[in-house]
Length: 251
Ligand code: 13P
Picture: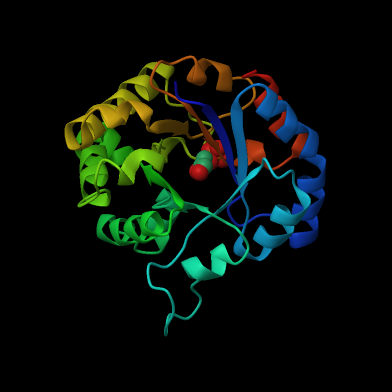
C-alpha cells in the first residue's frame, strides 16, 4: 500500500521569517497528517531549509528544490549533498520543469543527481512532464517515457524503492489550466508501466504524484485516481490556510 504524499513546492517564495512562521503554523497539520497515514512536506528555498526543519514538526518532510551531484568544488551558486545532510535534509526535487527550462537541467544531469542522492540514502522527487507544444503534438508519452528512462538509467530495483516521481504537465503549472483527471491517471499509470518494465514489481511501491494547478477544490479528484499517490503543489501550498485545506480535502 502506497502512502499518500502531499508536497508543497514553494519555488522562489518566502523569506526565512515567512518560512519560519509557516513552519510553526504547520505543526498541528503534520500531526493530523500522520494520524491519517499521509506524508506531508514542503520544499522551501535553500536559505529557509534549516529554519523550517527546526521549527516544523519532526514529521514534516522538508525537501530542497535542487542539489549538485558533486560533493564540493568550483560550482558557484550551487549546494551539495553533504551541505543538505548537515541540516538533516534528505529529500530533494530533481528536474522540475522550471529548472529544465531555465537552468539547462537535462535528463542526463538529473540522472547524475538521482544516483548521487540514492548513494547517500536520500529521496529524489523526480519531476517529469511535457510542454504544451509536445502535448498538442500528441508526444506526451514519448517525452515522459524518455525522461523516466534517461533520468533513472543504471539504477537498480533496490535503488528505486525510495524514489518518488512527479508528473507535472508544463502547460498546467501556474496556469490554472488543469489536466483532466483522465490525463493525470493515464500518464501516471504510464509512468508506473515504464517503471515496471525497467525495475519489475517494485514499481508498485513507487509513489507517483500529480502536479499542476492542484488546488483545495480539485485535489480530492486527483487523489482518487488509482495511480496518483499524491500531489506536488505550487501556488496553493504557500498560504497556511490553503495548505491546510489541501490536507483536509484528502483526509
Ligand atoms: P502550481 O501548483 O502553482 O501550478 O505549481 C505546480 C508545480 O510546479 C509544483 O512543483
